[in-house]
Amino acid sequence: MIENDILKQLKDEISEYEYNTYISKMKYDENTSKSDLAVFIVPNIYIANWIKTKYSEKISHLFEVYKKIKPEINIIVESQKKDVKSFIHRNKFQTQAILNPSYTFDSFVVGDSNRLSFEIAKKISQKQANIYNPVLIYGGTGLGKTHILNAIGNAVAEKNKIVIYVTAEQFLNDFITRINNNTMDRFRDKYRNCDYLLIDDVQFFGGKEGVQQEFFHTFNELHDKKKQIVMTSDKAPKQILGLEERLKSRFEWGIMTDIQPPGLETKIAIIIQKCSLNKIEIDREIIHYLASNINDNIRQIEGIILKLNAQASIIGQHITLSMAKNAIKDTQKENLENITLENIIKIVSKELNIKPSEIKSKSRNKITANARRIVIYLARTLAPNSMYALAQFLNMKDHSSVSKAMKMITTQINENINIKAMIDEMKNKIQNEQSNKRT
Image 1 (cartoon, rainbow, N blue to C red):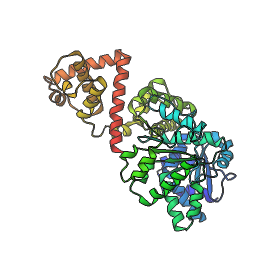
Image 2: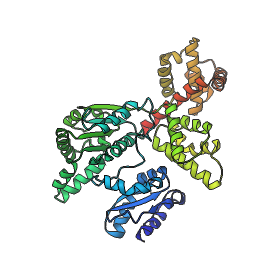
Image 3: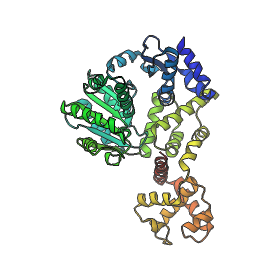
Image 4: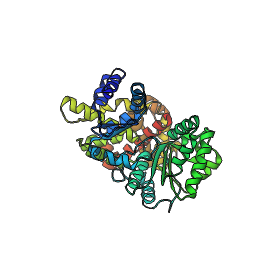
């Protein structure tokens, strides 16, 4: 079969580890696939997400090479196999992506950081364009925006609503293709005759005048027809460079809500849920360690859990703390690059509501002294700072003062679970801030 030839071709182009861990788990669904749609079944959502992110475009290209037709690539989790045909039928009006059946409201972990976005999404899935229209959800990479869009789509598809879920980049590519083929009438018929337009990453429109004009008119027509428009972005409209003022104003017509990085408890809940869904067993201590040391990108969290599960399966033992530490070593290295003492002081002072200058002063005030000890602890665990350098930076007597402070705060962490949780939360925010700078 050509499908097997395509997977063999991939084997020659990627590492043996990636092929064995991900690609080899793919099974072509001949019964559901069509000339313009290739459906593959995989064991769990982690493998599905990884393949979609890294290789769906490559697989589609290889189909084009072998069969002269470039199909959509649909990766379905084994547990959803029985529903594949119904999902495809429901989403026949979509452009270039079938909704992910695993991304539902029930599978979304709600915390203080995303509760408002979640509640708004549920309301508009119950009443189309009746309360908020448009809706723009913005926030950093991997915080759950795409999950919410898919959850809306899956919920309203159950009601036989016509749903279009597409990324801004896919919208642009479709736009260019239609212009080149002189079929803009079909493009407009597709995008302007849906009940819900769900469009991911609208910041991609920035600086692209032609597609902005087309989207402006699509937006207006849908809005006039009382159709629901839901968008996501990595930033607020006013911060999107190259976005026309008239689009910025349209995006702000309804309601905007931001998703913040999840707190420690929410991250723990996310890991527990991901493990439960995929029948992966991890001890509570290891879950807490992962939540405290991985940044806030949920897709990255999923990837690390998958990596741990694959390693444990290969060697035939349970996931251990040592395995967890090794699995996130590279991630930690990336997160800790260029973390400065100023970064650390800024976060600590904000969390404890004191001035950064107080931490660097010689004050022995109890609150200030405690803040200074926390800075020392974070500086020693997050970055390669020597005690001598810390003493100089914090205007302390010498390195022995730093050593004494380090011992005191370490004892507090070991004896007081609340202090440990507070410091873990600060560590989490420092790492996330550094991660956001890189992206």
